[in-house]
Length: 104
Image (cartoon, rainbow, N blue to C red; front, side, top):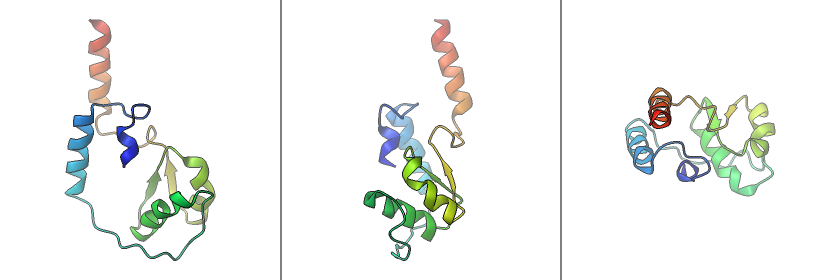
């Protein structure tokens, strides 16, 4: 989740990102990695991300790096989304804030 704080990806304040991650932590379940599927991606650093999604029975994998995950996502029938395509619970709030900022 470190990419959500990157300036080129982030659409909200870092405080809002931290609050969202804190709320998310209330609903997550720890996943134990079992390296059963390697290698599946072009980048070895992406293997742990894919393993976590598969072992955690994820419905989707969200990454700005869709090119490296595309083949494996198809193989395992895992939805692959960019952060911008991922449903954002704050989208209405963000739109209102942007509109208010433009009207000033």
